[in-house]
Image 1 (tube, rainbow, N blue to C red):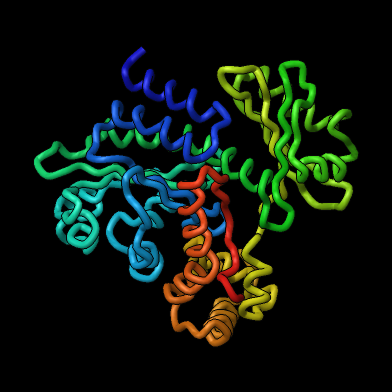
Image 2: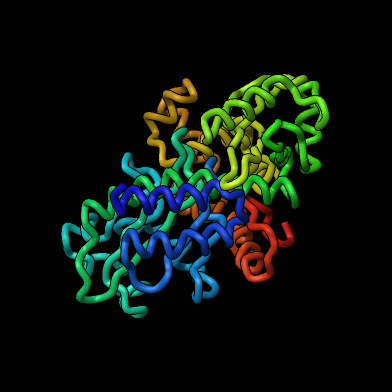
Length: 368
């Protein structure tokens, strides 16, 4: 086994241990340091997979991340921005590549990196095999160090796919144990004989929707859990509930035990929709359009997805801008971040220092 393979195997053990998010970050840090040597500690982020907006930031030894750094990601994207990396085909980027070897072209090089002794940046997405983005990691190197290599970038891409599943589980578990979103995910733990050992309250409700109970598991839950055990990894399925909604059932074999964690959640949840309606009075069509704007879709792509004319897309956008008091897509995304995602980031910064679960998804700003 090569060093590259051994480090990926170590990360897989961390990701499959059923850890809370902060412990996952801390356990992954020394492995990343061995595999891709870097300066100081990694900068970890989580994002809402439905919008790709930041929901938490954690860097050992670094306190609250400045609001302007986060807002720039959406309002004035810099070279090698997290948004760019999350949307890229490879899910990996370096500042050197993005600036054609001239990192000083990037404002963040002067404002966010050099003051802390950093001159190089490697960022990679935490993206599952189903192409869901759950976060990103940034690594830095100081002046005089070798540039990040193709091997470093290849390792980062593989590491991102491995860590994504651990992050996904940690965030779903946090919402399942301390929910603050509608239809929160449910988490069910099973022993090696597929008997339930614990279940969060939302899991009990999801099982009921699938005509089952904790003691009498629905067939799809048992099948997914059994497949996860057989593969010594993961398995998933989509199934329609008694309410007529689609449910994702995802099973993960936890290491080093033979326990299986089963997460039950709504397929394609849109937790931002009710907040948009309450805060800004957007129509259903306008909310659909905003969701696509958040993912970076062009006018042409939005028109195709919604089966409407491009002129109609522009009319809907104008209405959204008027209702939200914005003038461009960048301003709109920045507004949504400040109103519904920055409060989540700030809440999570407190949670990481008080051993409370880090939660994902949007939340309402205080007083709204």
